[in-house]
Image (tube, rainbow, N blue to C red; front, side, top):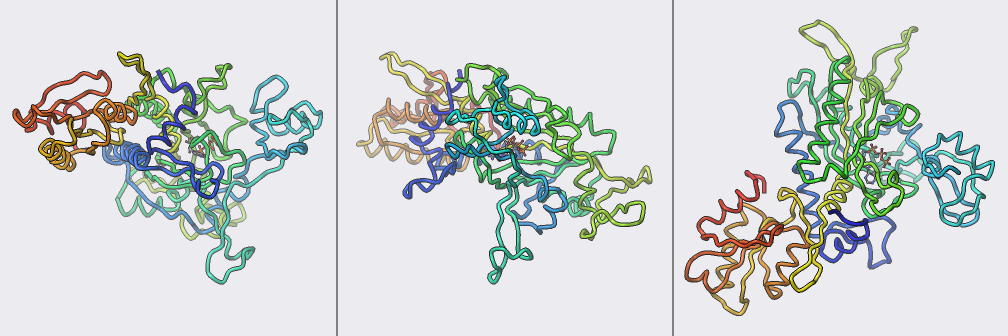
Length: 482
Ligand code: ATP
């Protein structure tokens, strides 16, 4: 089972401290969300799992943390200033702003090429999804990069001070490619991984944390010899399908999408998206899926674009602004070339949404009450163990429970809770995905043992306090990674 729709997660997320609407005391801010005490833990666990899979568990990837604001020339030469835009359409009747590439054609299919959409709009054959009007403007490009100005004295429209908030983390990797390669003495193939915030002034943000203007990305650029790119691309596609599966996403809710030629970004040779079933409630099965992450073969486009070399036939440099040549010299083959780049790019927030939706289950108690149980993978669960006193008015029991919580904390994320009866406390922990509850009762004072309750089976086991760390770590299946 998974969540029946995103709405089921929105309510749970707010009620249980995962995600709150941002700026709520001032009426909110469209499509902005703040991550609460459990949300920040979940995000951190997703990022940690990704970082471990990329940087620690492999021998061929280094980490990086580049600036959010880069020299404007980066975005000029990457092509973002000219092409990082969505085609924007306005409804003249209800004033809704729409993305032309998401409008449904008369046949009910979104994603028609822009020229075709323009033609259909002119012929009044496309309807505004909000009010049904056919009075739509023609598509025009809208650049998604947020602009800002640098320096205290700069005027808002001073072109010399213009800068952008990065719309992807990837460019920070390309401009540091030589720094990483030389400082870490890397030979091809090798990768550079980065996690960080990106910003896009999306025309139609929405669907909770699925599409927002400020979000976090986990991107890795894997540099390979041209000719080895296609095989490497396929390996990374397989790798990430397996990675999401290993963290609990059901294979039935994952699917691959091969981007057709006309959809490919200007730099891409091939792009495959991993889709998740974010919209299971939609009747049309094809519309239940949307992108979770993209895996692109970016060729040598970016390294060439940021290089002072090569020159054209007349000796004129293609990039007159760059001071470096980002080509690679293969010592063994005595050859110089620009590496190809395979880019697995995932969103932290979209991944969190997918993990929450997939973990969502409902279970009926013996009394006929429906309970939500969030079956998050233990590695992702915000809390690994909750220590609960059976009687909160008994100082010895409370003292023992608090001491157990403190002793667990250096080993794994644990909390103490005595704000309700035991049934309520169990239900609360089930709803936030805590794999184990540890209950201290009257008997514990005598036999130095506690009850360990399993979130998924509701089964209970008596465990000696002296064995508790080992017992929980073993059952959580975690090494030193809590
Ligand atoms: P989309 O087609 O949904 O706009 P994209 O293809 O432009 O996404 P990429 O540039 O490939 O996205 O970015 C890589 C990943 O970053 C996406 O797969 C997604 O997980 C995440 N991402 C991109 N834009 C957003 C956004 N506005 N809000 C949340 N996550 C995003």
